[in-house]
Length: 326
Image 1: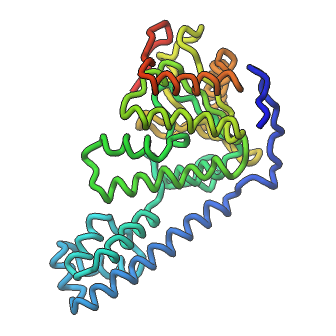
Image 2 (image 1 turned 180 degrees about the vertical axis):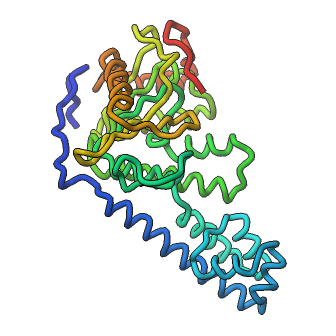
Image 3 (image 1 turned 45 degrees about the vertical axis):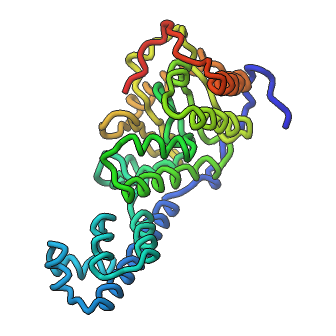
């Protein structure tokens, strides 16, 4: 594949409005999860009946009300994976049935972040459904000053990070992995839809299994070379401090008249919207972008860092880039 000229950004026309995801897509995703939830309820009901347990008896075993059993079986109420697995054990489910139940629980779970409430700024995304917000956005601008953002994580890097958080069970780990992987479909729906700025300091400071880190960097470079995203890297010693610039994802509205939405990806805060607030974040993003390595220069840095890591030569070289945050 022909490489772009060093440091030169190829201009990609903005996508036509008719090609952008709409609120119908968000509604379809919600509908799909409801279908999965109903199917899960049917499986759980068959298991209960096969075990000759009444709804009241199973409720007593699980420590809940009989009405909850009924709502779960009818698909009206979600069930957690630990609760579903206990249901399976108490009804004598096979190993294959338990695996299917766990997978269905993951598929039925909404892909959530910290906020709750009504649709935001005219968007169909609601109830903390980050996946729907990302699917609807015309374009997503990601400034990430520490580590690797979820949308760019390889499966091995993702699993490494989830496993470090030891409070999660195997089922919960699987659910978190599924949620992250599902969100990454936005990378493939439309080329150059993501603009991402990573920092040299964060990339040099990555920790974990060396092979996983090298593969992660190679994966990012591969996506960038195929125009799956616009990649920039803000260098150590750059003129702008990153101390007061928390990681954010700016979701540009799919249609005129809607509000852009800013999600803080490291902090447990509600999203920001409104022209003044979002424009401030956009201006900051563009400022960092102007002082970053861009295009092939960014790709070459990421690939050279992967080679350094494979030889055990990389590390945080210090400099005046500030701290990387959480």
